[in-house]
Image (cartoon, rainbow, N blue to C red; front, side):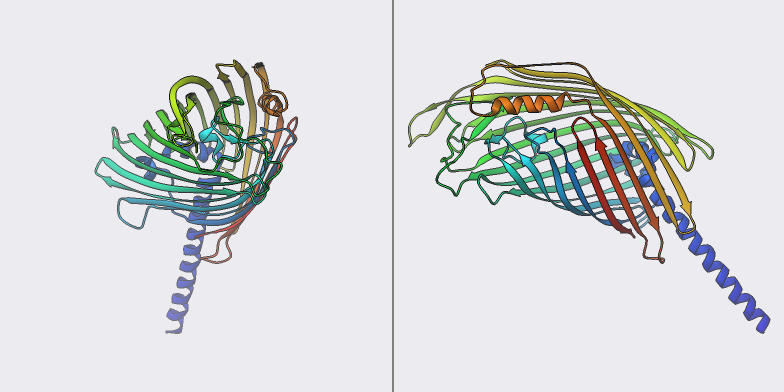
Length: 502
């Protein structure tokens, strides 16, 4: 009897050890899927809702807090010299809770200061430029961002049906003159379906809808020394009739609608050809306090494509991807007549005055084994920005090339990863024409500074180290450190992240 009991205890103990090892192995596999640079390239194709069931094999939910600081000596005045603050986020992916159903979701809170902003009192620059409210004083801008989203995909035979939705709010302000109060909301929704055209490949299609709105108010407490306010129409140009006064009360309103469609061919696993075609169109407008008519209207179109081949087996992993993104942004400005205080400014016509082109071509490859990989890459960009009257233009054609290497070391109860990224930018052609500058406004300095930043040739060195380890079956913390240094623009960036995985 004692012998049988002893054998039973030994068997149970061995089962627990094997089970713990299996659990640890699955946990480390889930971390590898999300940090391995070769997997990251692959996973980018599976962001489409109806392909999400193939994005990862393991379900995990990380929660982390990060502190970050970024600073440049040479920078775009209208985006600032860098950000400094912290963020708290979680990103969950679950595919084993219900049969044939994949769930995902994320939530994020950011609190930071955009430093040394000038000639821009409008949030979400990348979405709304060049139609910014501006003054020559500027300063640091305190910003809070709330973001959350979620989605579901259901497999039905050879079909997968999916949907997701998300919301993002940006609250920005400054407590000294000039005092902007910016509130923006960004709502997105997507529907998609994919079909197994073979046992190995799925064809996926999805449509994304987006609605964005920002309320922008600029006020002053000081009675004396108020700077002029400008409502830019592109490359520092503005309408004299509706700009220049700091005493006008009211909100500047922005509204934007967007639709994006994608068609993707992708394999179920780590081997095969990937093809993606996409088109995105945004239509926006701005109204000013002096009139309810649109002061500006614009359309922002992006045509994109990717093609690649990836291979992954027990010995070697290799692949290559080529992509392009062709952006064209065109805008018009309203021409107004002052009908008096009772009527306000009346829109009498409009002028198509602004053009922006950003054509980007990228090629990257990788080769490696289970624990290491090397990714050389190169890109070519053509950027041109124009305003018609007075004629102003800036353009640059440049190449970026570099190499990124990564090594992952699996320990007894953890995973350590380190990566290094070297990148050089070279300008092949550049030019600028800034006619009609009004002296004493500072706008000439703004355009020259932004042009210098656009045409800089920095060499950057970036690195990251991350350690995931297991304290118990439920406590699986990690720590990550990332840093970057760039010459010419004298950029210094670093971030420290602490978190745990469930």
